[in-house]
Image 1 (cartoon, rainbow, N blue to C red):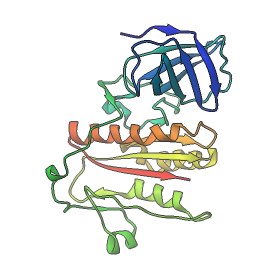
Image 2 (image 1 turned 180 degrees about the horizontal axis):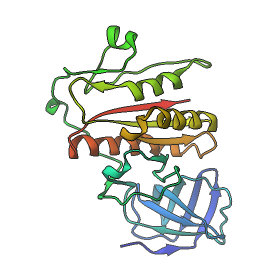
Image 3 (image 1 turned 90 degrees about the vertical axis):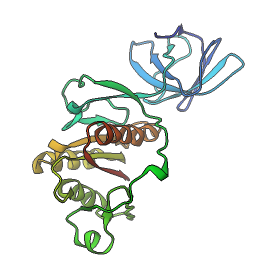
Image 4 (image 1 turned 30 degrees about the vertical axis):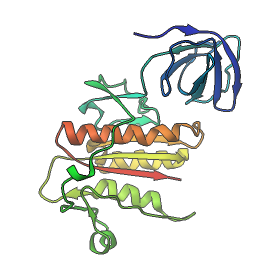
Length: 250
């Protein structure tokens, strides 16, 4: 059940907004914001106290005012709808489709603030993931269940390497393989490169992309990797797939 709609916004500053006179609001709760012009945005409660709530607005506070803005508390944490239909799709940092197709119908909604996995319950990492890059496969092998950081500097082709790994990666003898790709703070040119590369090589068919652009609110970069990891867990644990997660940031 959706919560009460408040029009008691007292202050808007940077990516934050303060709403007064609130009741029964919890930390981390998702907020639906409607501007005076009818535009819809999402936010999340950062702090609650003395009848006030501090809200972090994901799409930025430009155009928000203290008079015509309404706020609705949903009573739920940030969630993403998961479904196998997400395969081959491209989403924004907050999980909205940006590939021109309608939103997929979710099988269920998942809290992006997942619980940690018991380390003792993990299987010992044994199976290598072939990236198709000899220096990684031969000298710094990527193994299922492990992380492989790749550090880069300004002007170096880290985006090219990330795209190459995404289209070439595979687990030997396993066809049920997927890639969840999340890029944060990239330029429109870099976003076009990723979308064109994935589509041209056919890698998009087994991939889910989350793209946060440099001109998007910086606060979205906090939620984008959580979205990507939640979707990856769905494919891995619910659908029994082998999943490679690639996170890249400019």
